[in-house]
Image 1 (cartoon, rainbow, N blue to C red):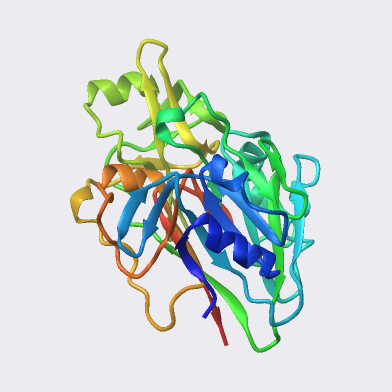
Image 2 (cartoon, rainbow, N blue to C red):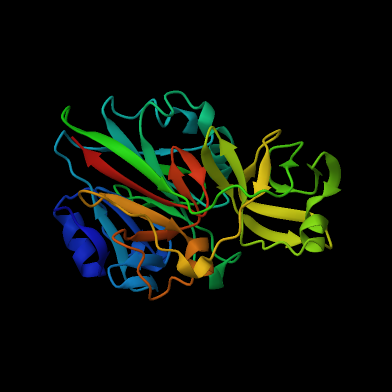
Length: 325
């Protein structure tokens, strides 16, 4: 079975020197100790390991990528080329993507990914690199292209992986949030922050509304996309400035409601049937709000990220993918 676990720098180095293709998540200092090779990486020190949730700067989460149908390609994309990420993917296979949080590519992907050519035709899955929360605002999230040991805070790094004709990639999303029955919220502009908006048809300041109604801002705004719930998590509320910031953009003229209340302490994670997924990730907000340090959430392990990618950018979800026949 391919490796998919927390490991030491020595174990990861051995895999790289053996020529394996890898996706790596770790604190920046550890990533900088790895040799050049066939890997892509991103910064994050939070993980769901086999023994439960953990914050560590001493281990890396390493996922080995099968190469049964040929060698994957590793490429980087900036804001001028990001819309080609799916076009460049294999006819049968998948693309693993890591994007640095709060970068231009993060914003562009969040806003424009649904319009990218071949999106939803070719599978793309991955995560948003982040940092330790103690370093938030002081340390830039980074991604790494392993062949050149190129660290980057603006470009996305992608591994395009071909599959045999007998296999296909299946991406799954686990979202414990559902759209609540409260006020309908609409925004006049697409963006990562908002001030004025339309709430039940009346123009109001969103920050003041949330404060006045004592809203639980751990709950995201949720949009219903043809039966699928898509979360936009609240990063912060500043009543003094009348501004609400989000971890993903709200979209113009989309109907949002706050999520229905949930018992964060009872979060159990996705229930997976059949073979273990090749890779998965979970949201840093689930780690924080659900108190996952030291707790397990079922069979899925992987990084706790600043955003999840399952075709689109997601918040407060678990994402995993399998290789099916």
